[in-house]
Length: 41
Image (cartoon, rainbow, N blue to C red):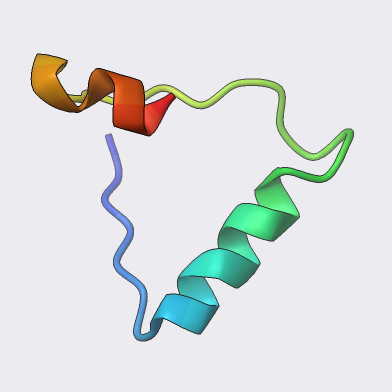
């Protein structure tokens, strides 16, 4: 599994925006602590 760290919050949002585009990616898998699951969704 890979770990991604961004240099800035802007870089992070840009990456998330790209991944959210139709046809780029269909699923994202993540290990999320149970108490953070709703926030992740």
